[in-house]
Every structure is written in structure tokens, then in C-alpha cells.
Length: 408
Image (cartoon, rainbow, N blue to C red):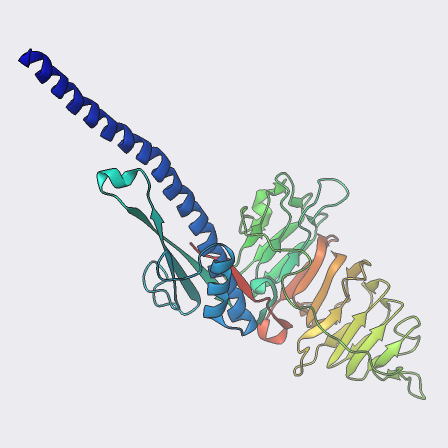
């Protein structure tokens, strides 16, 4: 009889211990699941708060207030009991500690338990953090100083080539590299025939996609794939070029003042251009010798064509808001641009046609282009050695877009 009562007592202890174990397992499943869900929710909230704070900084707003408001909207109100939201700029720790460009937001969240209390755990604490980077707008060379660049984010291998070098054309480039934005993995850049690119001073030919090259030895250096793509339309502020009153021609018919012009340009007989802005509605076709200093050509409609027999001497303004800008086709004008010139040509300043196909047809001059050349697509053809000597200080520089990014 005593043994029977002893066995029942032992059974009760085993059952009690089993219940505690079961409750612990349930607590692990339920309370652990709640804690995991809260951590995931808190991480999403802290990411959003860091980005909101960074955006506020770019806009000149309340950095702390933006972070707290964002966190509250996502369920973390900084009440000091269930959660705490902290902000540090520069970050207090991590790989960006002490860097004022970064903002660190930390959320500490307390999650009450239900079943885990049986084993002495009344709450679980989650610590999550996010760091966002703010990069203010700044004046700098376009596309990190690539001397020749095609902006097309996509292309094919047939009738929409992003960057095509063929014939016997040689692009002899100093002062900058080449950038091809196309993500095509077969023919982002196409080389055929004896077309070549020669860079100096350690610059590179950078492609987002992959090149299709017949003769690798004609490239110095060899093109490299995997470059960071840029958005299109371009990730920089395009020029704001105002159009003045109507241009006028001198009595002898050889000199033209700056202004708006809604006929063929340049007019027959004009060989000298006065400094200023020329707004052209019918393109720009230079077939004879011409000279102009401190000039900007805003081509709102029509093509740009330079004849190989023309000695073309043009340079951009060396001061003012559009310093260094020579030829500009706005996004609305996708007409073709053909660049050429005779042996006496000297062209200085940025040629910016973000929606156009630019054909670098030739240039016999040893002075060539002191230009940054940017188009939607680029083609080099002909049989001449085209000199492109890019000097960032003498070309157009733009205010870059402000950036925010989640760093970690």
C-alpha cells in the first residue's frame, strides 16, 4: 500500500515536470515567434526611419523628428516602456562611426511573454539598427569625368548599338575615359574592322554590359565589364539655357550676334559669331569655315552636322552658370549629331545630347575636340585619328542629384 502511494506521488512529480516542459516548449514556439515577428517589424521600421531622417536632411528638415515620426507610423512610438528610438549622427559605432554623412537609428523593443514566464522569462528585448547615408548635391564633372559616354541603358546587337567603333576610326582620348551604360551582355560596345580606342594617363573603358570585339589589340586598355549603371534620364541636372531675342546679321553679312534663330544656321556668308547663346530651331549645319568664341548653341530642334571640309573654331564660355557648355540638345530633341571638321578645326567645350545618336565621323585637326562628348548612343566611323583632349575644368560641370541610401 505504501509503495502504491509512493508511485502515485512520483507520477505526479513526473507529470508536473512534463507540464513545465510542455509549457516551456509552447513558450519557445509562441513567445519566440512573437519575438521574431517583432524583430522583423522593428527592422522594417528602423530602415524606414533612417531613410526618412536622411531625406529630411537633404531637404533641410528636422532629422530627429522625421525619424521619430516614421518609427511611430510603423508601430514604435518611443514611449520609453515598450520601445525606445535613438538617433546618432554621426553613428556611434559600426563601420561608419564618426562620419557625418551617415545617420544611425536604433530601435530597442520589449516584447512581453506569456508562456515563457513559467521558466522565468517575462519579456524578450530586440535591438535593431539601420544606417543611412546622405550625399548632398555638388558641382562636379558629368558622369565622373568620362570623356566620351553613351547613356542608353539598353541596346541590341543590330540596329540599336550603344557604342560602335568601326571603319578605320581611332578615338585618341586624353584626360578621361569611356563609359558605356548599356547592360547588354553580348554587345554593349561593338568593335569592327580597324576601329580603335586609345586612352592615355591610366584612364579606362568602363562598360555596364559586355563588349563584342573583333580585334582586342586595337584597344588601349581593354574594355572592362561590370561598371555601375546610371539612371536614364541622366542623374544630373541638365543645363538651363535661356533664349535671348532674335539674332542679327551685320551689314556685310559675315558676322552674327547671339540670339534666337528659326531658320537654317549659320546663314549663308556668316563666318564669325559673336559671344552669347544661340537658340536654334532648325538645327545646325556647318559646311564652311566659321569662328566663334564664348558661345553656346542650344539646338531645340533639328540635327547638328559639321562638314569635313570646314575649319570650325568654336569655344564655350569660360564663366557663368553654363561655363564650358558648347552644344546642347535638350531631351526633347533626339536628332542626330555628326561631328567632323577640317585640319584647322579647334572645338572646345561640352557636347551634350542625352537623347541623340552622336556620330564622330572624323577630324583631321591635331587640335581636335577639347570636349566631353555625351550622347544616348555613340558611333565612331571614318578613317581619321580623332583627338579628344578632355579637361574637366574647361568643360561643363553640373549640380549632381542629392542621394540617400541605406548603408546597412
